[in-house]
Image 1: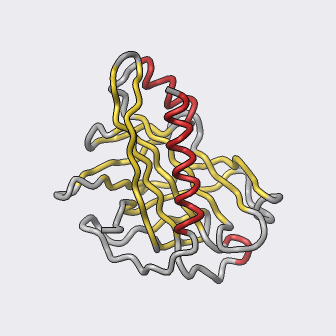
Image 2: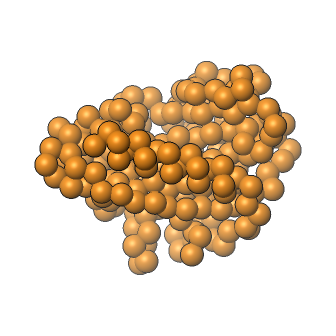
Length: 194
């Protein structure tokens, strides 16, 4: 179980680096407009996206887990915060309000209840710089994301009221002056690649 989640996570990271160099303008999706997100005072627009799915067994129940990766393209004007990636790891349980949690807590919750609507959302900033990157994670409890499915079966993710993300992994020293806690919203995150 942990190996499959590990491989899914590895795919998301590889996709992040692949798409962070993309120059695809990304058409608006069938949802409520183009993908965008805000971290503190920085607004990011989706430039490329991808989704990967795998089946993981939790408590003898097979669950399809997907990872959505959305990156920016041609992102500048934000200094050390140039470039961003959001990833959402989620079970394919249809629309509704999904609780946001950590990767470890998601695996534990799905083991306890294979029908739990729990998602992991991460926002990485600084991906279009040669300096460090900082990953932001949601608190362990209390935050959620609204999930809807369009007529093509694609999952869409929205957080209209700001939630507080906490600083996580920092690579190469992280983004200079990145706050420990940052407000975050997302509008219509989905795989608009095809």
